[in-house]
Image (cartoon, rainbow over all chains, first blue to last red; front, side):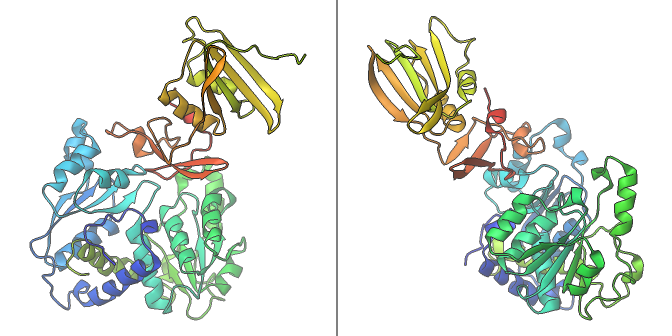
Length: 309
Length: 152
């Protein structure tokens, strides 16, 4: 298994064994991620953090990951402060940035941007989200959270709720869960249901998939409830949005019949879809999930830079 | 005597076994009628043949360029190209859909990086050959209507 100098553009570029190896390495990174142990594993290495689009968790956790391992970070959080503003191409920006660093983490609003960057850069590219395309590190931290809290990834039932059509995290996650043979239930308003090609691909991999309209029924049978944000801009009619948002809101009452050890996950940011009253319950795993981004990204950066095999 | 629906040509190209209904798209690829010169062009649609219905296009006094044949392959993957010289078939070959299609069709996703001002050509990989399904190398979106993405 060789990760050194590899680009991480999509979860589909990783095998089941490679994913498990990343999760194992991440497990060992937890004390460093928590600041309980110091590390200079990546001392002298520089990560360029190129965020052409807003981000809270992905950017901060990548930067924290690099710094916890003794490395340095350069980059920008808004394209406004760069020569892109003067009309420079992304390809040229990447070719310039790669000469200043050892690894590039990027988020860009256009699909395929990370794959294109990988063509131009000789340093590894880690995709931090390309438009509605891929977000492989989110998927890895989701899998890490599931494995950590449920003890395995495969023999569980995961209910995916919310915007399954446009949400990039759920497409990658559905693929990865299919790879591990987890059972999946999709719950979404008709106009935001999982795209048929994703369903077809997952079923082709042998995944057991069902669709559910009754949210409470889906919750009481699930081991993991993965909630995503319903985006207002996807609805031409605000009335329709308001109806849907009301139906798909998770609160304590909704969770009354949930399995005792069920967990609620969310890639965050959440807006209305999980009531803050859920935060204090045993079900809420989303802030632990957000923390898990640090050890998982530490593992990935270390692997592609050859700090760890 | 069997009546010919279409006259033989002395010199030129016969594109046979075109997917029924696609001969107009083939003519579009060849920039016909703008780029006709002194050629006589005949097109027959929905002709009955041993292997089912097909379209045929005959172009006098013109042999096709490789780039034109590559485009035709995407519209009519079962087509055959017959080069006619002095009423004889001098060359005959089937069109071949390559594993990767570069710079021929554009991605239909407006938010794909290949549709921005980057120094890259649109690039597609073949998902299946029968029926022909291709997906963008960059954004991975499948191109539903290949002819609509053609860079004429």
